[in-house]
Length: 527
Image (cartoon, rainbow, N blue to C red; front, side):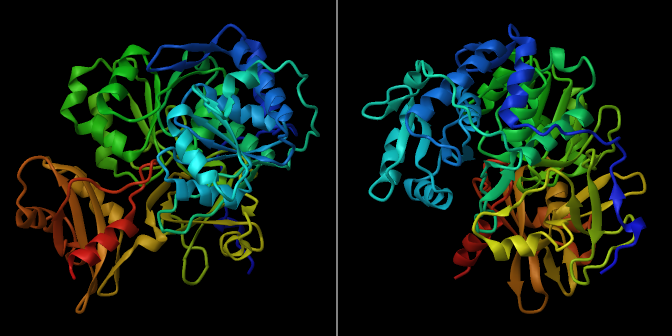
């Protein structure tokens, strides 16, 4: 199928050059420019690590893990919360020629064992409180070597690797070698390992930094790393992009509202990457008034669709720029970002350098007119190589001419701003009309009594499906009154068929709603 040139949307940013080198070499060479600057701060303890120490410890970890038998092409599975040692171990494994794969530190032993099998893991980095989970996952099928930060017991102490006096391993420099195997968040229940090379990740680091960081700004930037490093947002956009540009990163191992707000206040955070649930807290939670967040200059939200109303409320309350971006694991991080001074409310910004996009009708696979809604396709040096051992899934996502189908619905306006409306597979079909759950959720977030919300489709004999809202309420909530409130603001086919009160909305660590869990709960509750 030939594509009209006008259907291909180009990044408005000038192209950038990506050096043929490895991620860790690029970051370490940059780190040597700022040896005495603070690279990482551990928020709970205040412990700091300079860029010079970061560089030295990456080298020592590489030597230590190689001495344990870690070889080029081996995978180090990261099973730990955000701590300063996370990037040291990850970049150290890359320096030894290995591959990094992260997993949620709250995962069960069975989930951990599954990812170990999928990635061929023989080495695991973890923290002392999680050591027992790793041992359970590794027995009896895996002869994994377990590297433990803290009390290691019979396993390998992280400190012993840093004490290794062997020379750093000399490994071939191959920019097209696998660097990371992040696994998709599994919102649909099917988890896949995404193959990312050094070249694709480094491309995205340079694309993001060229679009977002203005000259001189990075020198004073302090970013909070609360979003998990096992997720692509935390891994590339916060950790790697930050360290590649000399930013100070403050790590926070888990989310607790007071600890989160206190870290912003205490460490004078200037740049705050968040996901929609965190922005919802910042915009509406009364606890925020107890903390001084005046240091914030920029809040960037991604990982899931966000309504313009919540974005504006957060900006008004925080008195700083609140912007959005769009990305996915298959893009090594980001596809579009909002450049400084170029915000457009409700949009996910413009394409990063060296990136093209199309907006395609998901049924006909033909390009839609500019401004119309379709599936977002993209192409660029940051795109993934495919899914590990999943040729059918790879072929379904990467077209023969190299476009990556995002599975996200949206449109791109005349100025190249991208607006994401929902996931293709999550649309609710009401009497033949399509209803985007994210649109209703954005509306529900503006209701003063709604603390959190998610919308799913429920089978209905007459309509095919009806929208059903699961809501977390502040105080007493009249469900019928809420349905009427929504009905006054939407078209007939978008009206809520039911409202279900719940204690919490199930979500992934990156803030994406686990609709499959809600749908299962809804079906069970109606039996």
